[in-house]
Length: 165
Figure 1: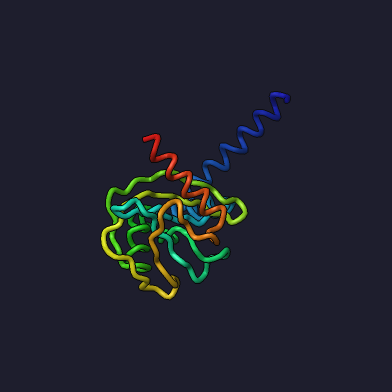
Figure 2: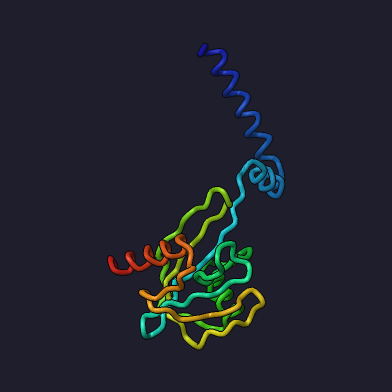
């Protein structure tokens, strides 16, 4: 590139930068978000009891057969762990302890980031939301036959990461 073109580009970006710095902060924030892709963020948990059984929920709105690990969406200004605790209280009326993040994944087609935890349940899970039909404990070798392959892989992944730590 010729020196004059490089100099012109540099002057252009310096000019744009000067304008940018003079814009109100709220306008800069809105403009910076304009070109960014949006993602929703969810939390989910592989939950165990004292007998090492896993808790699965039969969800009303789950796209596959209905059974899956509990979780939900993160609200604005909510931490992932706080969102998980809120979802569990709302859906099945339990608290959790020994909470650890085990992995996360991105679902590009859904534009969704999922954060997975592992924890131990305090209390007796009972559906307390219209979103949940049933809450049931399962031995790892006796998972529901209609549990989706995706949910099985998530459980296996959480289990294998726990064995390594």
